[in-house]
Length: 318
Image (tube, rainbow, N blue to C red; front, side):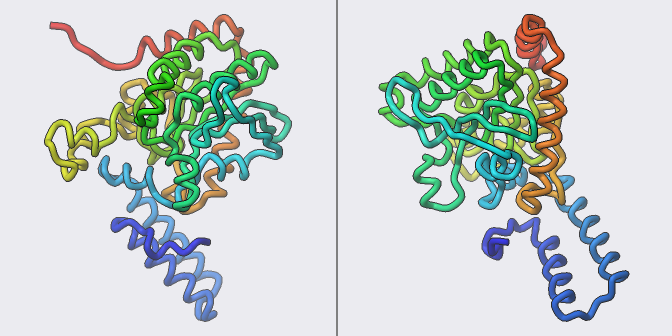
């Protein structure tokens, strides 16, 4: 496992201290099987306590954790085959989004999503998961291919938002996002969406129209980042924790408002603590949901997809 000493969040420290103690006892051979089992039970209990009642800001930190599994991690873990597709056939390729055709067991499907990168070099190459117009148009091309070849679609969301640069605006960033939203409601094939990290603004929503939407337990989904909200409302990014609470961006909040259909509980407390275990959980969910969606008539599926989004949110009239 990668050295995590400088990547442990403050509220996680008790878990890692106990885990390190157990590893030390195992190396020294000073613990028997029975005692080791009891220590592991205590570790599991501690994980449940530490990662259960977190503030919105603490969940933001987990969603952005440097060791949190990315789309490429999940593709490597759950796919038996994956062939990446490049380019939008209009301008170029956008490394901020990954798209291609894959196979999970006997299921063939189209997969796409944001790629943040793991280290500094990868993050720069993938532009921190912030897509440009050509990235959104690549996604639309893949969606249409999925419909043509009658393949289900799997979308992984993990982005702070669409890229706000001048070049992206010149090439039609708002139009590219809007076109994805419009066309996704007409794609006659099942679409499964999973928010695995950050679901930021229109950059996330452009990949989020689907028949079933799930969030990882510590993922976030919001119209704006807490820092951006704090800068607007309080003129200070230091108010980000307060903004996070006000934005109602956690998985529990999104489920309450009907924005998502379910929450995927993270194995061993948080996805970065057991990437393989969380990948196995996601794989099982994908296979179950795609099988269920495949039994729905395509016309009924489109109607339900539209009704799902029209029913989102809560409002009051005087």
